[in-house]
Image 1 (tube, one colour):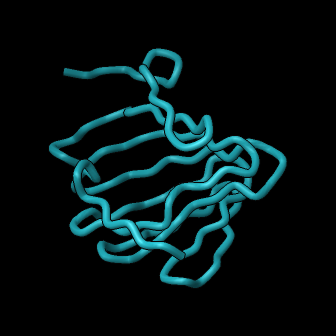
Image 2 (cartoon, helix red, strand yellow):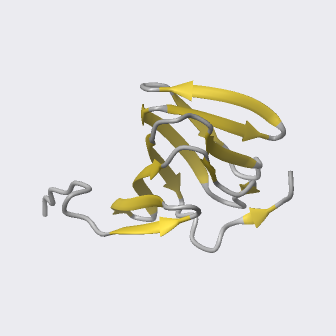
Length: 116
């Protein structure tokens, strides 16, 4: 079965400070989401025990903290974050940050929190 989806036809959920995520696909446990982070928002610093994650920036500038090292990505750049790597994505800019995140397997119940 072929299923056409977009963020206009998919329910979203909110996380953090008014950040939004749309579940676009679940392909045998691999999750694909599109997310938008408003200016000056950030995710918690965390790792995943099993999930490998891939971030692709659609628009804006993403600031990452990965294993205590800082990195910036701009539109059309991507990064892969392996399991057990502590990471945080932040939007330190004055415009929305829009990106895809692909997690394999799903990150459900797979989060380890750590203070920076």
